Image 1: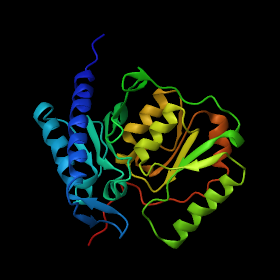
Image 2: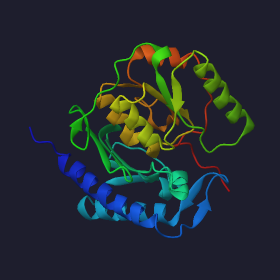
Image 3: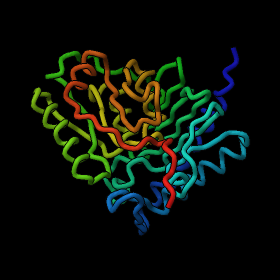
Image 4: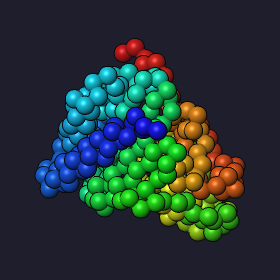
Length: 278
């Protein structure tokens, strides 16, 4: 049976690697830092340059495809996931890491058709690790198969999370309430790479048992979420709704069910919520 999307996935891997080269080169230059939604929501000219590189390359090869790109949405484009073939792009997942040369920075490219993820590519640029997944065909890192951890005891688990870019006092309180609840179970530890895409790949690789975060965006998780499920893991919230801005990815339902009881949930505005008039 012909895989009609394999050509698109091959192109995604090629362009992710090329984008990674741009990111690595930019680390040796002065990085002009700007802000978006808050003083800690950072963006650089490299984010914008890489996103345009990816979009232009894809348009040349697949002119009818649609795009959801982090920087395009920040510039005012509508964030809408339709049934059309759609590339969901985070040009630099981990911009704060990039600004501070903290060594976990990823190019993330998800691809959805009929609102279903068909493939995901996450290139951890500074580690030179290419994570890939194709729906129904498994997940890989540098062509080696990935598998989630088989740990079922929450007390012997390592959990990944992030604090996000919101500094709203209620959101911050919810984040730290969840963290305190989970640490007190107790668990072996909490980790965070500073990149949602890489955190998801850590779940897929079996390095951590779960990753949760509230307030992330569709471009942060579109690729990595498929990598988790193709490595044998599970998702809550995102499996049916990429736009929810919430994710819990885990190695199994035992770990996920235990964590969900400790997470102080809140609902940030959806990615596809109508824009408020200025």
